[in-house]
Image (tube, rainbow, N blue to C red; front, side):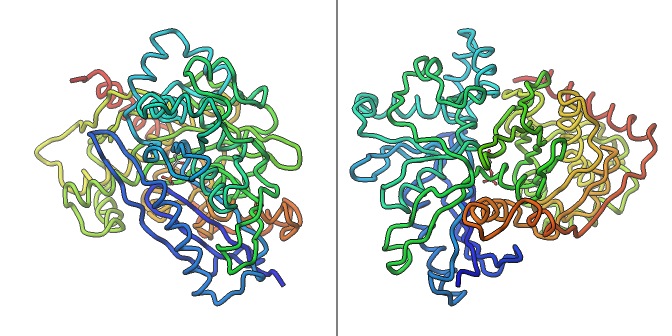
Length: 497
Ligand code: G3P
C-alpha cells in the first residue's frame, strides 16, 4: 500500500527530500547544503550536477531513514528555487555552464539594454514581469552568448534549457521527459501568461531557439516515472511540480481569490491568489501563474523582497549583535520602540514595489541614545514595513483590502515581528502549524493527480494554525510609523554612489 508521498524541495541553499503521510504531516526529512559559487562580485552560480547528485543522496537517505520500500510511495512532487537557469547537452546530460542562480546579477546589463531599447512595456504586457536579471530569459541569452557554438547547437536541438524543476525531472526520468509547469514557466520572462505559450517575439529579441524550451504542463498531473536506478528498480510517478513560492501558496491552502501568504526566508515572497483572471499591476508587482489544476489556471500577484531573513543574519554574522537569530526577538522587546531609528536593508537594491537595483542599505535617525536594542528592533521592523509596501500595492491593484495573511518561513517564528507585522498592516496574521508549506504544496499537487488526496476540500481541512496575531496599534501610531519608513526609503533611493 502506498501510504506515503515524497516532496523534493530544491531550494537556493539546500536540497531536501521529505516524506509525508496521508494526513499531510512531514515524517522524515533529509537535507544537503548546496555550494554557492561567486565567480565575480554579484554573480551567484550553482553546479547543476551537484544539485542532481545531492537530490539523489537525499532521496536515498530519507528512504533508508524511513525504512520504506519504494512501493510504499504514492508519488513525488517537485518544488524548486525558481528562475535559476540550466542548459545541458541532450545526449550526454552534461550542463554546458553552471546553473545561473536567480539572485545573480551578471545579466543586469542585458536587462538594462532591453529597457533602454524600449521593450519594457511589451515584455510586461506579455509575461506580467518587470524586465530584470532576476528572471531566466536574460540568463539563457547570457549562457548562449558566452559558451562558444552553443546557440548553433541549441538551434539544431542538441541543447536543452530548464529551470531546476525541469532539470530534476529530466534527470530523474533518465532523460525521458523535458517539461515544466505553468508556475515555473511564468518566471522565465519568455512565457506569455495570457496566450499560455512561449512567446516568439521575446524569443526572437533575445535570440533564444524555441527548440531548447521544455513543454509546459499543469502543475498537478503525471509528468513521468523515475528511471529504475533511483528506487531499486521501482519506477515512482512524478505527479506534481511548482516553483517554491507558488507551492507555498498551495501548501497554505490559499485557494480562494484574495488570499495572501508571506514566506519569510532569506528574502520574503508575498503572493496573493487573484483567481482565474490575471491582474496587471500598476504598482510594481509581478503578475504570475500560481498553478494549473484540472484544466484551470490560477493567477497571482507577487511581490518579492530581496532581503528579509538575511537582514537578521547580517545582525548576527556581520555586526555580531547576537549569536542566535531567535535572540533578536528578545532584544527588540526590551525597548518600547526604535526611537525613530529606521533600517532600510537594501543590500542588493530594492525589489517590489520599488525595483531599484542601484539602491543600497541605509540607517536613519541615530542619536547618542541609540542602543543595540533599537538597532535590532528597527531591522526586524524593516521586514514588516517592506511587507506593507507590497501588500498596499497588492490591495490597490486587486481593489481589495487584505484582512488575513498566512505566514511561514524562519522569521515567522519571531513573535515580536509577527505582532508588529499585524499592527503595521492592520491585518490578522496566521502562522500555519506545518512550516514545510513549500514541500506540502508539492505533495498536494502530486497527490491530487494520483488520487492520494481526494480534492481541494480534503486538503483545506488539513490546514491548522499554530499562532494568530491580531492588530492592536492605533491608526494614528501605525500611519506615523509608516510615514517615517516611507521617508527613509525615499532618502535611501536618493543616495546613489
Ligand atoms: O524566486 C526565487 C525563489 O524561488 C527562491 O526561493 O526559498 O530557494 O530562496 P528559496
